[in-house]
Structures are given as C-alpha cells and as structure tokens.
Image (tube, rainbow, N blue to C red; front, side, top):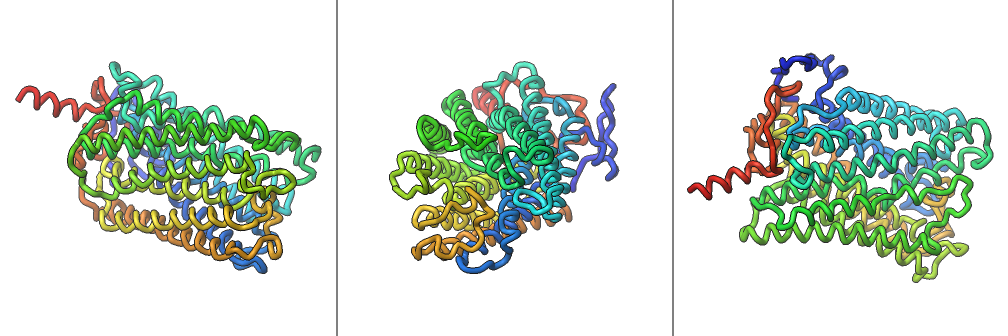
Length: 558
C-alpha cells in the first residue's frame, strides 16, 4: 500500500517504524484504520459465502443442498456474526479511525495504543471464533467446550469493538481544533460520533448477556439446559433496529459526497445533525434482548410492540429528512453533479437505509396488529421468517456495502494516495447493487407470501428440511432469488478487493493530489496520503467546510 515514510520528529511523539513490523506496534490512526478496512472486507467474503450456503439450503424443502442437518444452524449463526461483528461494524470503525482525526484537526486518536489494541484483539478473537465453529462449537454446536470457546471469542470481539468506539467518540469530543464547534464538524465526523456513542451504550448489554450465558452454560445449566438457548439471547445484535446503529456512518458518507459534488452547504446544518442523530437514537436495539429466563421475551405484544413500531418510524423519519436536505442542496446547485462510483453508491446506500426503515416499520406494524392473522400460538409470524433476512440484507449488503464502496472510492486518494479505477468501480456498483436488491427481495417476499414455520429465528436448529411445513406458493423459488443475489455480492466483494490490489497494491491507480475531487472538508487540505506519525503542524479550523469558505472569500474579494 502506498505510504509516505516521513515520520514526525515532534518532541515526545513516538516515531513510527516504517518497516512491516511497524504495523504490529503502530500508534498511528492511519495505519490502524487501514488494517480494519482491509481485514473487514476479507471477512465480508467469508460471511457472504456462508450466507450463500445457508440460502442454497433453503431452495429445497426436502433435502440439503450444501450443508447438513448438523451444520445448518451453525452456518446460519456464523454468517450473521461474520457480517456484523467481522464486517460492517469494524469496516466503518476503520474508516472513522483514519478520517475523523484529519477532519477535526487532531494529531491522532485520543487513545492510539488502545485503538491498535482494539484491532489486534478483534483479529485474534475473529480467528478464535472461526476455530470454535470449525471445532463444532458456537450456538447449536455439539462440543460443549466449543460453545464456551465461541462465547469467549464473542466477548473478545465485543470488547475490541467497544474499545475502538470509545477511542473514536473520545477523539471527537475532546480533540477538535480550537474554534471547531460540534455543530460545525463535517457530517461524517458527526455520524461517526453518533454510531460510536450508540455502540458504547449497547455493546455492554451484549457483553453482560454473554457473561451470564457463559457462566450458566459452563457451570449451572439452569436457564439454557445446554447450548440451545444461546442464539435467541444474543441474536438481537444482528437484527433491526440495532442494525441502524451500524449504518449511521453511511449517512455521513452520503452527506459528504453529495454536498461536495453540489458545492453547497446543507441549507440547515442543525437539521442535518438532528436527522442523523435520530437514526442512531432509534436504532438502539439492546432493550429487545430476551430475558435470561426466557419469560416475558415477546417484544411484540402490548406496549413493547408500540415502542418497536415507534423506533422504526423514528429511523424512517430521520433518514427521509436527511435525504430531503441533501436533495434540496443538489436542486439549489441547478445542475447535475458529475456521475461517479462514489456518488452513485452514496445515493443508493442512503436510499436503501430508507427502504430498510420502511420495511422494518411495515413488518413491526403488521406483527403487532396481527393483520396477517398467521401467528403461531399467538406469536406474530413475520419476525420469525425470512422477512428478517430481507431487512438484514437491505441494510448490511445494500446500505452497508454500498456505503463502504462509496467511502473507499471517495477517500482512497487520502488513505492510499491513489485513485481507484473508475470503470471497475462502476462494475462493482452494479454487481453490489443488483446483488443486494435480489438478496433483499427474495427472502422478503418469501417471508410475506409463504406460510413458513418459526424456523431460523425461533430455532435455527429446527430449520433442517421443512417439507410439509410450508405451502406451495413459491418459497423455494424466492429463496433461489436471494441466493443468486448473494452470489452477485460475492463477485462484488471480489471486484472491490481486485480494484484495491490493482490500483493501490500494484500502484496502477492515478496518483492523487491533495484534493482531486474539489471537496469541502478539512482532510483535503492535507497531503494524499498524510505522512505516517503525528503531523508537526495542524490546521486551525473554525468550520467543517474550510475549502468552500476560502472559495466564498475569493468570490467576495473579486
């Protein structure tokens, strides 16, 4: 990867080791951010392959296509953990670690060593997690010690991501350039603060739940009676509304790119910050976790159902408000911006967050009101079917992966000093966009239109061969549509890695100047890429759009 080796010589500042060994001992936010970004994309490939295997099995109601009755539930659980804890959260955490200090005039992250520790703890825990599943552990695993190992690895992942989120949030709160107030920060910095703050208040809930489960499983067997209660008590971390917290940075990416292309400030900055904050606030899903005894766990009946509908409604209104503000900025520009991979992906990602909120709102309302009248033992049906897979797909694959594509294409000059290939980028956008759409439509329609058992989400272990459990209205065909979409997404992830390899690794990409896009925010005032280590001189900022401010001043002078 392209990198400037002029380390800082400021007194008291540790000098970065420019050799490969320096990546192990680094205290530089730019190196740590790169490690998170690249490794999370590699784990994305693993997660999508597992998801494809699960979806292929659902294309047949009478036999297994890829997995077996002993491994289906484990494959399902592992794919969800890979897509959330190994991909989407660490990917945007890595982008935040790299970009946020540059946007606020900070020399580094607040706790640079802690940030590095968060990456290596996350990395080691990810390897242990994979080993636990390979050893027949994880939820529904047949090896008791493997189940315990899975819980320990899961704890390591949560601690690592929590440490990284604290580092990002503290940096934004305490290390902004003098004169740069919170309501003047760039939208990506604000969205990173919202997401990190919500992770800080929700991940400890998961950590506490895992601790209770571990003690019970290893020593007591009072609540779980084995390992078959593990998944239902931790799966809220992979569901909506919690997923909205993970994609809040996508809204910041979209705002950065759209406003830069429109050469405009948003008409009402406080409204922009407020709408982004709403999505994060209404994404708080920790309250939906099952009671440890399993009693009172139905969050659809009664007042809890109203709250769930309100959470989706709040996220829907927040996303709609932000997209409206960005659309108004484009209209005010009175000319269409130049089409690029980053702009198309940013627009599509923001729109898909809106779709995800709308689908969640409809599903929660239908379940609570039991309009469909298809509940099992009084429990509404949609939240236990592949309808939930559709929600996950539109947010993780659609909004998350497209948002990351937009961020990488936009900030690649600043991160690696090279622009990514635009033709490969457009092909990448088409592959990911089409794949995410199919991966969303197939399971969503299957959950809505077919009579499914409480499989996968009530008890993945029961989702083996479901012949006779569903009607003949097309569940298998719709599952095949979703599987085809995931296959396209694997190709899209491969194209992204190929583009990075060719443009950055092999240095075939166009070498970037300080501001190749004519952007607005402070990071584009710095070299591309900035030197490793802490900079000797930092810009004094009073605005999140200094480059636009200087243009306005020149126009007034003229």
